[in-house]
Image (cartoon, rainbow, N blue to C red; front, side):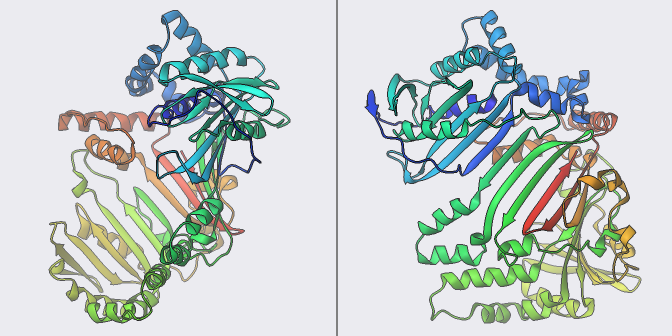
Length: 559
């Protein structure tokens, strides 16, 4: 239900001039570019109530965390109703609804009226759950449209049906209509509501048996192939060529699934491709099913071990830049070799594997700032001697942005400290089959720890070494072609200052949020209490696994 209210609110944000009564012809429907299949609030409660997260949210301490956030939202919602009694009835109806909800979105080739943005139509379908009054819910939603969207009601002819709709600033939104026992709502960013409503009807098909209580709470299918094909067709020649060089034409359907794996929440993202050679995606998401040998080098705290093909990334970027250059432009690869003093492809990247490990040791204090957070990034090498030769020939060319300040010997490997213009020191070393960079508090010690764990890495992993011990209970939930693992400690997350999280939220949220004024000592104490609460509900560790099979890359996140 929050999705319906949000979509209705979108309809009030930009002017669209529409006639009071108009007849438009509905055209043929298409598969939605985005299709969301979810359930009502009670369906979410049924699925996640038995999980560790559900027990935390229901606990007294858990309520102290989320109620200060939710209560102002409920108060704003209550202002849209006549009185408290009416709001309580409305809230009960909506929160008790557990039926299936389908949401479809189509992005059009045409533009929104008066704006240089693609047109969009959105359709919502609410299915009966066997106990809720969909007609009453429809009236509740109609009143929400009336209260939240300034404007007038108008009539639109859809085939032989007259549909009443609310004029919004950016969307024209139909009132909820009961059709064949299902509640249907359609919205359009143009004046073609008939097309939107016809598409909504195409979603409101008989889906057979109701969803099982253990089915996912949400799935979202995104047809990137259609969206990217349209984007490339609308781009000038060089931009379209760049998008192809980056591998965007190989991207197919993406799918998000949110459900459970026993007492854990399970979130999966699955991205399909049309071929294994996928440009930029071959670098970030290599088509391999081999578990990295670096899995044997993980330490305590948070870590991730997977694959990242630096050589493929370099080749792909060169190809994309070449696609944008004129035929008579200078050779970019030759320019890079001249400026760096080495050929990155042959002197560095050719000596690297695609195995990578990121390690965040457990913090000792909740008082450290982000600049003190310890970390180490490690790449496994084919030939550490040849790689080191190229690396240390190239680094002097980076002065004054990066310059060597100190060196230490750790057994048979030399460690180097490099300073930079922002005053953040980095320690790095190449030896024992790896290249490692470390920063933050105790970076030199962290670097030495990684080298110690890499001292006797096997040439390949035995069968019983290809899955971490604490992933044993998740064996049947791991993705096909599993080739990477990650383990996240809640301590690493909650140890970061609250102010940092607000800064991150400000970057991603569409509305500004005030930065809190927090006493550093009180904030550190609150974060320590949160860590204890997560441990009490067995939420102090999150795990994830990645895999590639059948031209599909998958990430499964368990919490």
